[in-house]
Image 1 (cartoon, rainbow, N blue to C red):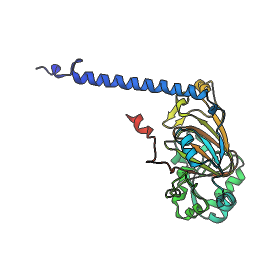
Image 2 (image 1 turned 30 degrees about the horizontal axis):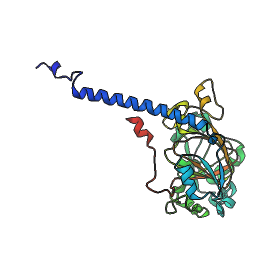
Image 3 (image 1 turned 120 degrees about the horizontal axis):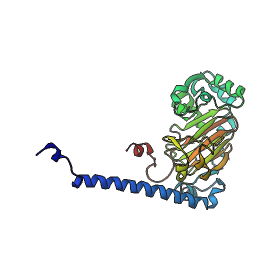
Image 4 (image 1 turned 90 degrees about the vertical axis):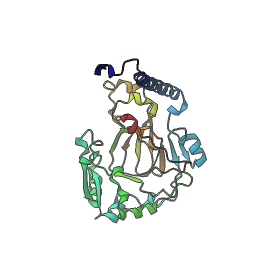
Amino acid sequence: MPAAENRLKPSHPKRRSYAQARANRRLIEAKSASFLQLLAEQFRRSSAVKSVPKLHRLHPRDFFEHFYFTNRPVVLRGLMRGWPALKRWDPEYFARRFGDSTVEIVDGRSRDPHYESNFFNHCRKIRMKEFVRRIEECGESNDFYLSARNFFFHRREFRPLLRDVRCPSGFLNPRKFRRQPSLFFGPKGTVTPLHHDGANILFGQIHGRKLFKLIPPFDLDKLYIERRAFSAVDLGKPDYRRFPLLRRATILEVVVEPGEFLFIPIGWWHWVKALDISISLSFLHFAAPGKPVFWRFWENAAR
C-alpha cells in the first residue's frame, strides 16, 4: 500500500476524535468567557461594588462563610489587638535593632517599567541602617523596596521579630502562622502593579497606610494581561484611550490602616500604593477545612 494511503483520512475515528476534542475545548472556553461576563454584570448590580466592608472583630465562622468561600474582599479590624509589633515596628526600631544586618532589596525600579518581571535584575544587598536612611530621606519614591520576594524571614536573625505578632484565632492556622510570612517595607510612594495571586491572602498593615485598588477576577477580559499574572494597565494613572475596556471594569478602593487586615481573595486583581512609610505582613495559611486552595493558572496556560 502506498505511503500516502497510510495517512489518517479525515473520516478516520482518531481524526474525528481529535477534531471533536478541539471543538469541545473551544466551546468550553467560549462558555467560560460568557459566564465570567454574566458574573461581572451581576456583581455590578450588587451593593458590593460600592466599597470593601470594614468589620470589627468578625467571627471566624462568618468570615469563612461570607467572604472566604464566596471570594469577597473584606477588611478585618481588631485582630491585631495586643500585638507588640504595632507599637515597636517602625524604621527607627529596625535601624536600631538590625542596623548592621544585610537585607536584600530591589533597587532602580523607577527606570524600568517592567521591574516586577525583571525582579532579579534589581536585587541588591544593603545594610538595614542605610536602607532606613534612604527611606527617611527620599520623601516619596517607587525606586526601591523590600518586598515579599526578598524572603526577609528566611534569615535567622530576623525571625525573632515574629514574636511580636500573634495568630488571629480561628482565621489562620496556628501551626503554620509563623512559617515564613512575607514582609513589605519601603518608603511612601512604593507601588505594586496590577496583578493577581494564585492563593488567598491575609494582608496585615503594621506601620503606615496603603491604598488598594481591587478588581474582581471575572473582569479579567478588561485588564489587558501581558505577563501571566500582571496587567499592562497602570491604575495610578489609567489610560482609557489605550485601554478602553478598563472603563467597564469594577474597581474597588480601600485604604488599609495600621492594625487592619485586608483579605484578598484568590484571583482578585490588586494595585497597591504606600501612602506613608509602610511596613506590612502577608499570610497564606488559613484555618479553613481541607487542603489549601491554589490556582495554578500557569499550568493551564501552557496546555
